[in-house]
Image 1 (cartoon, rainbow, N blue to C red):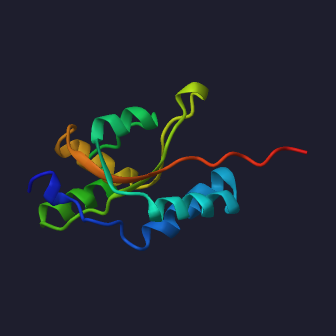
Image 2 (image 1 turned 30 degrees about the horizontal axis):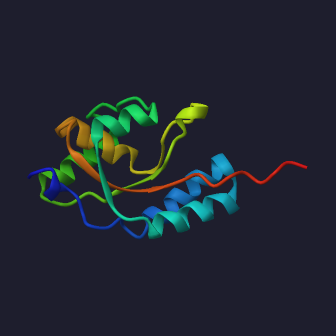
Length: 132
């Protein structure tokens, strides 16, 4: 299966609540909901697996990791993976790219081809509310 064929056209509906749950641990519910709204409306763009790994500062999970292995099995069966949901990092403040949903899918894709173009939706981190 070629790189383009291993990906669905749109994120799965359950990916957005999963992203909101994860982001709310980092930035609170209101800001997480705002980012998820951005993600729902963001265009699909494609980025290489190796660049997503580098920009996120995350370690590559082994192919034997249960969720990575499940994604690899899904691809082998010809099923498509859901595009990933990302929050853009900030180079000027050393904030890495945040993988809001899809870390295991990025790792699975990297194991198949580190140069694979992964479809993603990317949102910018909204400014924090001023402190009083």
